[in-house]
Image (cartoon, rainbow, N blue to C red; front, top):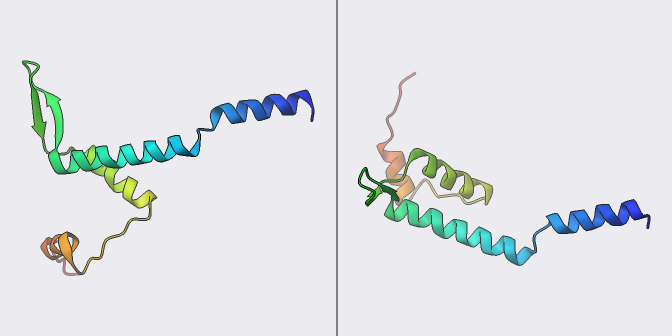
Length: 93
């Protein structure tokens, strides 16, 4: 192997996180997103006191994308997704 190849391989190895680290990061992201969805987001008010708010559209979008990226799908015929579908307006053509 040439010196350039060795350097490129070393640089690639330094940029690649171990699978255990990636799994831990994935799990922690899932937990944090769940906490935000279930409990809301904590922000500080004008006095600097923590206030819990409903999740922002941006946070909901991150959770939606996380589920999509992980091929998580819901059954639209039962549970909360069915309730959501039932509440959607019907548009006539």
